[in-house]
Image (cartoon, rainbow, N blue to C red; front, top):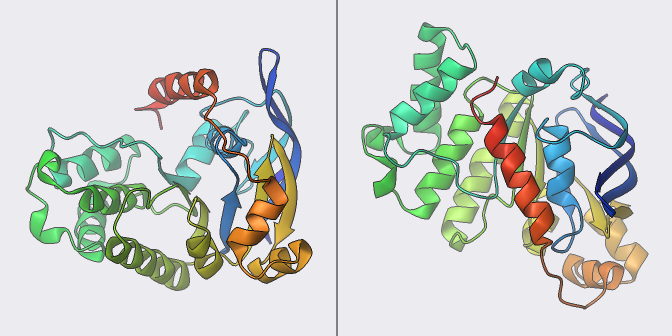
Length: 265
């Protein structure tokens, strides 16, 4: 059963086509990686799936709902960890969690139980009353994951969740997420530039480049298709060796949309 279905999705910014007629699906309970070079269309696609951007055309169904016509139902279906930090540094870990739970109308008793459970799950319960500005990068990332799971979403989106983290913290974070996937059946949709991470964690992968999906399958299937020994080698054969730059105009537009969305349910 698919929990995400995308058909012929297109997103244009003026004359620039960021996402160009892509189709893919994600199965319920799957760990799915969405890979691509900088500016390939990964973050734009995630923004559309999570109601931050409206598609130019195409059809999307997420947990049975349409992000365009049923945005509130879709938002209750997912949690998200953005590529950029999104915590309030002047609040404590507990206050960041509490604020999120109130926004999502999680009943008080359940909210408090989930906050304690999730802070313990990411090894931050003993720091719940500490200001977030005192946290390391790894601690902030773990708190963002806990916050994204507070309203018990069916899907969690992770946009480069381990960027800049040391190997130990990355390993612990993925252990948390794999346990969550196994025990609660949460679907995990993530992007990463760490090919070894994608190969180790993802059950299925789609590669996007220049706004188009150019390959999909397991890590083994992608390596076979590209005639490569590693996923990184396959990725380079599929997408080329040229260095990519982020499209600043597109990123700025997406940041403005994200700010507009913050605080909505």
